[in-house]
Image (cartoon, rainbow, N blue to C red; front, side):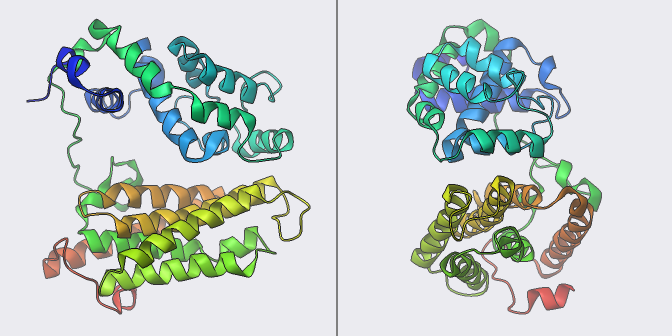
Length: 350
């Protein structure tokens, strides 16, 4: 039986309280609930905890380069940090958003990134550093503790989302996380394949990419692929994961005009996203079977973000075909989370 909200408030750490309430809100409402339909306290928790995680992973740049359903211009997110009352965090938001003409990012990602990257020429920015140091976790926990009645309706709500059966290929991206329906090594192989499919874009977006960064990502994917077939070298996976992360950071940090840098901010962002795709595919290979599905979902997210929108439909069709082919093969051969993949897996499926 899940703890009551009052029990959570009394016993949970700041992180556990924020994370549990966030997940219960997400579980309590139908998947198609619009952000504006949540109560204000719920919206504060959802926006603050989501933004806190994204910014902590890559600064405001990561926040701005993605699309948010129901909050295309991040107005709810801005309002949530204002309501939260954590002054350093809100100041970071306010100063970041001040570069946009009307104080909020355009809904069009290319337009917003062009404005932002012109104004912010280094990473991390001063606003990023301010946000990294801000006590957001404590502030949000205090916000929840001060309003137990606002979250009382979450008593008895489980934070675990039920697995939803996937029927049609076009529905794959609409599910909470269909990748946990694949056995562990099959889902890792699926993620590695996605990263390989968009790997050529790394040089396309970054024509003068230093040789070492291309080698980092290529070698990482080879290591990840080997892990799906035979013995797992955790140390090599760790190194490969780290070097993909370094490549993603290097694409963003090399200044325009510097030798070897991407030609502009948008190209730098796209190159970084290709490397992020490989980074999360390697993370899936490093993680235990009960955690890897989330990393696979992140792999898919970064792949779609890296691709131009006009290529999404074709990519989704191929990705879905691979997913269902793996699902059928897993069922036919009764694969488990411990089952390794055949060396000629993709030849068999294509």
